[in-house]
Image (cartoon, helix red, strand yellow):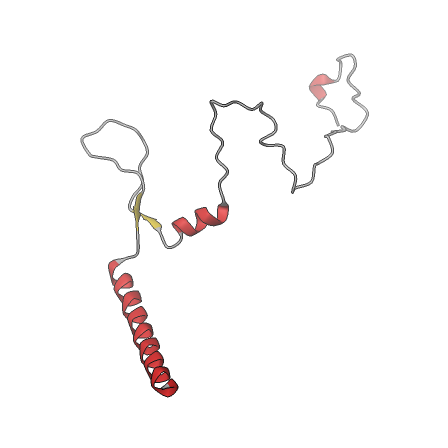
Length: 116
């Protein structure tokens, strides 16, 4: 129902249910995002691949306390501190990769002698 504060205004149907109309929803796959603005050579359009972006930041994480307050103080405030793998995890991963490479190398060496 309409809000009672509009009850005495002309043109407001107080005794009828409210009706909300919207335009038909377009398909999710079609987008007019880049077609809305006219082409302008001064504007550089970047078409970003989500897969490439995901792969670029894969394995990276944010650490530390975050403060974007912009307040003036003696203490230095930092935002996100992006880091790579923790050192011990990196060493463990490198050791396992080294073992895999050694196994692969010995397997290839055995196959070489079998082929001769």
